[in-house]
Image 1 (cartoon, rainbow, N blue to C red):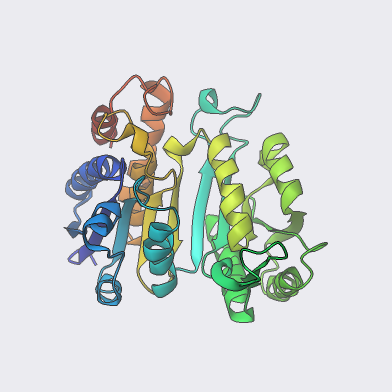
Image 2: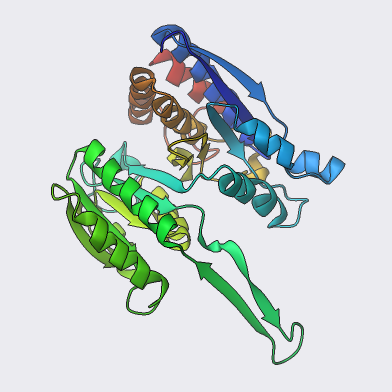
Length: 353
């Protein structure tokens, strides 16, 4: 496999995306030399600027071309001059759905307790993973209006869940929990007491699949309770599996307790196809071009990408380097407060590989 050339599609995107991706590519180049692997990247201009010039988000041909890559490295999508929803639905969600990236994988790991807003919590307390179903639920975009614009208007938004979609997400979560091999505990996070159709399906499927994994401890938490325990007792969690909407919400809380958006990375996973890795903090347009944005989330996303490609030693080295930098050089993980520029932080990660 060492002779394989990894083909990586790079989508810098909008706002500060190109800045953080530049640092991630700097780390990728250094890691490839140190760990003796070969890659070829291709920069793609999908994002707000192209949309403003051409009216295009992403075409069916471009989606087909993405399937020829081994992985996708994304900076950010979101432009202040484009109406919210156009780029998110026309690029991000379209890629996730078309490429069947049905798992959103979000590690939540605290590297330095100084950057944690929770009292008396250390790296031993905050180390869990959220496995979010990424292709169904409320984000499917299904629904309708009745009497739109009138006083008796009704808006209907459908949470669309299939047995196939739910089961493959839950099964992935059990397998991931087993492979992670830490507490070997998987928590189903939902709302079974109110959402009695979708979450009846989730609970029944979870109960069916867990019989195949007797080595994994299981439990359940309502999503509102889970947010409470994230703050009070994050050490209770190992792996969490949940639906699209709840996963979107709780992972932002997870980002805050691990130190902020500057360190939070995620993967959109198709276990048998092409997966996409990104910092989860968005395009942060107000910091564009100022060389103050934190690139560590993008660099952590690169580490996840390398692990997905089978470059495990390189991936671990990237994470270890990030841990060193976070524990020795930075005053903060927030943009403009790090005590280092964007480029300097990228350079420090390279130095510590």
